[in-house]
Amino acid sequence: MIYTFLEFVHIIACLLMILVVLLQSGRGAGLAIFGGGGDSLINTPSGSDFMKKFTAALAGTFAFTSLFLTLLASRAGMTSVTSRVRVPVPAPAEAPAPVGK
Image (tube, rainbow, N blue to C red):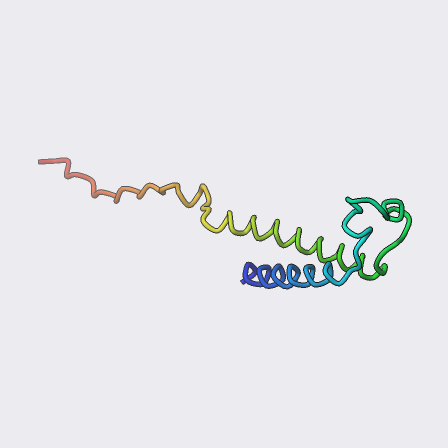
């Protein structure tokens, strides 16, 4: 049940992060590879403070759910050491053999 819930939260975080990143304005027109606008890359703020914080929160949620989904998936088939140990069955108590014959 917790695995399904984490999977749901993970998918929602992925979709929201894609949407939020696409809604943010670009910085420096593709990093100004072909010249022009390179100096404004560092000096001009882009995007609102809310969008940056929301993106950071979604990235943290994505990382958290990725980690825990991996841990839960890897432990699904694991068994405990104590479940593999066979408990010896005690021998039934035998009646004492007749002594005088």
